[in-house]
Image (tube, rainbow, N blue to C red; front, side, top):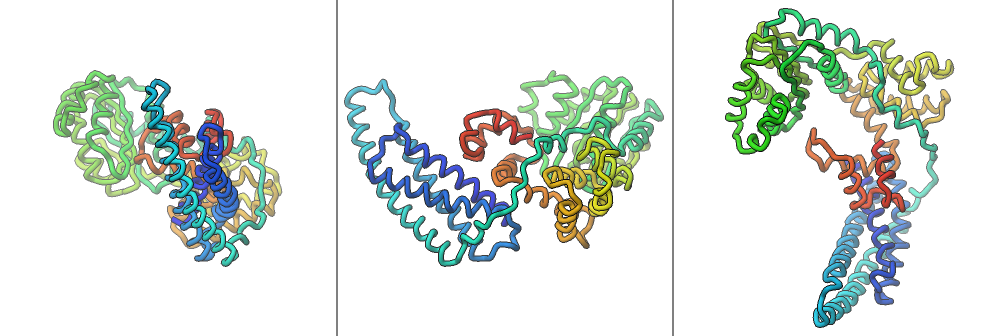
Length: 469
């Protein structure tokens, strides 16, 4: 939570400073007092922003309680200033060129009063800003402005997270599951893949889904998540299998009607359904109740973290198999790691091989952890010393943890390594529901509106696309 607060404070401050700059433009024609007040606020907040940015770069245990409290107070103050600016800009935007003379005259009087009110509000805010500046001086919070090491961003870093053409360690499991689904051609079959988060269950299931070459009358893929909207999930499956035949109708149907209509549609068809990320027995059973167990050679693939849920998905089905996803072995872990960083297993410098092996041991064969650490190291100097420091950070974070906790902590290390504005952009994604399909263009516009894209970059969609990468 402390890390979230740090990034949130930084992003709010950046947005406020941008709006204060815009207020000083010719458009608003401020009174002299208001203009001077805004200049003062902008200068003071810029100094505070530099401190906040340095606080955001530090772990929670590196910041004393007084600095944390100051950060929270400054964030609240930034929000108050932003509210004041937004109210003023909203009032100024009302009305238009088509208004008659009387309306224009009345509007000018209102704006004059608003400008005076703005000057008074700015004076109050100015007092609060001075108070926080003095508090920072008393508690020596400016010590956090000490220079921090900056490493240039490797322009190839975003390539670390692109799909690798030949997925590592997946051929064997993919073939095994496809063989399980192929045998007894006419029998209804289910394979439920289960295992720890980060083991690549979804990737494996999707590879099976894509590589089953047998003909099916219809296919569908849905992701369930921890708090599923069952009605939406059923509608989504029905839309995919029927190729939108029921569009405009499913919204009016209740859950039971959706189940009946889906069963009726599928009863005489050979279908392939992938149900990803089932969290509860109840959710899995409800979705499967809509899938008729016919003898047309239909196939269902499920993924879950829970062995109990996997067992529930297979219960009472003769042609059902539970498949436990396994972590990568040492060799496959190295291949994945080196491919992400050097494009080839053979291209890793000899002086980095020993420290690489030590780092990989901390990842416990979890593909997500390995990919995250590769992304972290992409912006580090390629020396044993730099990688050794990263290993120490990982060791301090993950020793004595379970594999799943280790992966979470490794992901947090990758988060800490992001620049402040990228942390804010990443945290903004939490406003969307789990498994929500986010439109990239809309997301970039939201980032711009919230002031999360720094400086002049906010004017260009290309900057937002680079942040997404």
